[in-house]
Amino acid sequence: MKDAKRVPHFVLATVVLTALFSQASLGSSFPSHSELKTALQTVVAKVNGGFGFHMWATIVDRDGVVQAVVFSGKERGDQWPGSRVISAQKANTANAFSLPGLALSTANLFSAVQPGGSLFGLQFSNPVATDVAYRGPSDAIGTKQDPMVGHKIGGVNVFGGGLPLYDSDGKLVGAIGVSGDSSCADHNIAWKLRHNLNLDKVPAGVSPTKDDNIVNDITNGVSASGWGHPVCAPKAAEIAKALPKTHAIGPKP
Image (cartoon, rainbow, N blue to C red):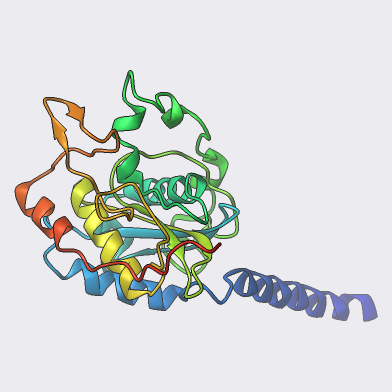
């Protein structure tokens, strides 16, 4: 009888410890689930040069471990279901190919991975961990208990919407990915979101403005810089040019 009474307490302790561990893994550099969701909803409500669709956003830490997954709509079906994993791919890509001294957005990688490009084949490396992407109950998707949280998602995505995250000290702490609209609108939304979260102390980048903004310099299928991304719509390109400046502090010596 004594053992029977101890079982519920053991189970409760395990649940509590697991919850505390998961919360601690978020780290002080990242917004909470509710903060990220509110910030995403605020940005999505603005004009971003796309269709005005609802969005998914995923944050990963520097090890590529998913920290949070949110959506801007009321229900998980209010945005493209396939964009949940794409947002995680974008976050993983921006984190995997950015450095403490050089930020690369997923938009910056588009031209380089095309046939004949300097990074052709990169898109086939680091495949998505499908057991992480599709695990767990569907009703937990996009909540604090999203099944991807706490696991490495992997994946490489080479169009707009993924940005590395640099904290107030300029330290590279991970990345954010958003998906659910045109790739150009995704980039604009990710940029505004990162800016509002104050995680854009970008040290340097390959764009003309020396950051990781989208580069629209493709003519007749060729990028002049080698880092170009196609223009989805003139409005999106105009918005990209007028995006908030990053809180750049420059690379540390």
